[in-house]
Length: 153
Image 1 (tube, rainbow, N blue to C red):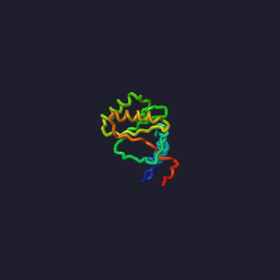
Image 2 (image 1 turned 90 degrees about the vertical axis):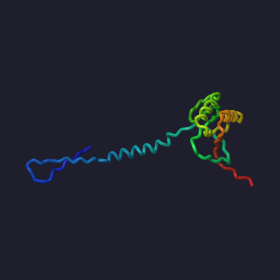
Image 3 (image 1 turned 180 degrees about the horizontal axis):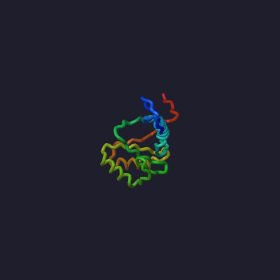
Image 4 (image 1 turned 30 degrees about the vertical axis):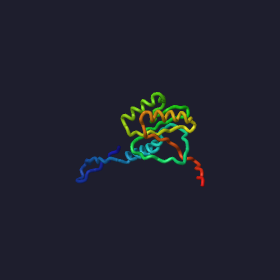
């Protein structure tokens, strides 16, 4: 940081008396802030993470209203269960965890994301565990088809 010293005005003497001028140069600070802003803008989308699941596709999918934060139960192709980004939940412990969650929040909603290649029986076992825990607001998550078929007339 540089300081500019200007000569004081007034009577000239043999020795000049200088008065320091303390001005803060904000340009470097603004430069640093802009660089940080660009870094955060670039890295923010990279921080989102999720579980890679091949969702089934339907034409009748509709978004549900977002009142409170729902639980997301994901069933992967190999049968691994994930509850809100917590991977490796045992199937036997699922009911107990969902019951504890329902007791703390009776209006909890559960979105079940199942891989398209998982068996129907496995998905029904998961649904039985969810409804057996006393949770009544359950919905399947699907994707819209990438190439929608034309409706039949």
